[in-house]
Every structure is written in structure tokens, then in C-alpha cells.
Length: 119
Image 1: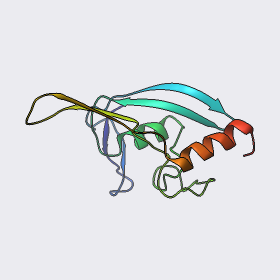
Image 2: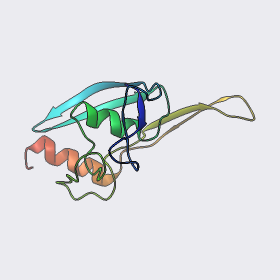
Image 3: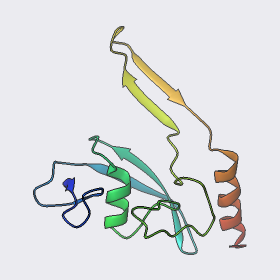
Image 4: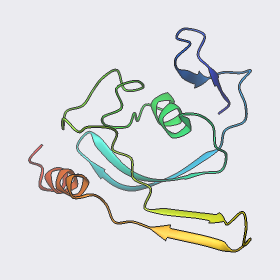
């Protein structure tokens, strides 16, 4: 879905017909009661791309104060987004660089709450 500046709020981005091409691929990892854990791959790099696309299809990011209407049932600081793997070509060496990072502890804790049905 193409993304451009919102006509309703100039501080936000939105899906717009006149926006720039924005491609986000996603895969559902696990469904919980009212929440979904997904894996995303962005093919383009538009401002707020993940947040705008997920909100547009009805799956806003937990903790996103801008694109989720302020919903934050877990009281997280920031958004429940985590880049577990980044891969790019180094600008000087031209070699592929790949970095991976485990989920933060608070993220794991919330997933455990969702798995157990405590939330």
C-alpha cells in the first residue's frame, strides 16, 4: 500500500493513493486472544511503514501511541516492535553484514502472559 503524508494530520503518515510505493510482507507466527505475533519483512523503507501498514489492516502495534489510538494494555514504553535480524551490504567493504538480537525480557514476559491466557 502506498504511503504518504496524512491529509488529516501533517505529523502522521498514511496509506494514500498519491503516496510512494511501500511493500511490507508479513507472516502470522502465533495468534492469541485479541493479539497476533507476526514476522515482518520490509521491502521498502518508508517513514513509519510497519506502523502505518499494520494499523491500516486493523492490527496496530501494541504501545504505538500514534497509530493505535493510544491503546497500550501492557503499559509498555515504546512499541512492541523488535528487529531480531538485520541484513545489509556494508557501504565500504561491500560485504553482507547480518546482526541478530534476542527478544527483550519485557517482550518475552508479555508473550508468556498471552500464552498462559493471564491477560
